[in-house]
Structures are given as C-alpha cells and as structure tokens.
Image (cartoon, rainbow, N blue to C red):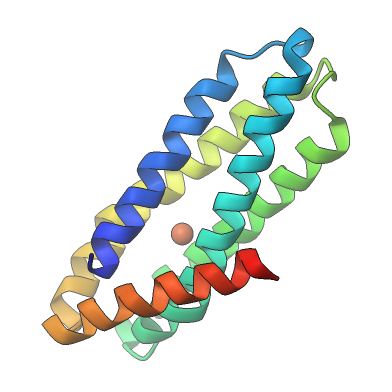
Length: 147
Ligand SMILES: [Fe+2]
C-alpha cells in the first residue's frame, strides 16, 4: 500500500471505532474502556507515523508549511482530548460530550488531510516516494506501538 492508502485505511478504522464508542453508555464501562484504548493506541501510532515520515517529506515544500503546521496542531488537540477522556474515565457523565469534541476534531483533521494535504502532496511527491513513504510509515507505527 502507498502512503495515501495507508492513511485512508487508518482514518477509516478510527471512524469505525468512534462510531462503536458512541453507542456505549456509562453502564458499558468495560467495552467503552476497551474500545477507547484501541482508539487511543491507533491514533497515537498514526500521529507519530505521520509526524515522523509523512509531514517531514512535505514540509520541505514552502507551499505546504502552513497546512502541515496546522495538521500538527490538530494532532496535539486530539492528543489532549484523548488524555481528557482518559482522566474522566468511562463512567463519567461528561464522557459523551468530550467524545463528541474528539470526534469533531478528528473528522475535521481527516477532511483537511484527505482534501487539501493529499491533493498537494500528490503533486509534490514522486511515485516511488509515495510507495517508500508507505513502507516507512508502517515501520514508524510499529515502533510507536512497540515502545
Ligand atoms: Fe493526521
């Protein structure tokens, strides 16, 4: 898979887990906790992989700098919300509203990435690079989850 396919696959998985999480109530604390830790682990590995492999390859292009900075800030926002949710705990009354904040933030980021960023990246990156970045992204993700 090339880098674009891999990122799309991750986005798809995240949306899927989010959907499942939305159906869990405070009384389903166990499944909520399980799904949440899956989502957190997935997203952290994804963000790490992007920041280690995908973004540096694009940042070299002056036109991309603002988009990449914005995307990196959005990663930090998602990370903060994940930590908030973890602190609240699955039985909290505020959990669902915090989860919708997280969802909003993720959906916005995915839209930006698959829209503006992918469009420009496809103009900038050579075919071989798109393949190589896919492999490197996978490696970076593995390292993130191993640590
Ligand atoms: Fe991202």
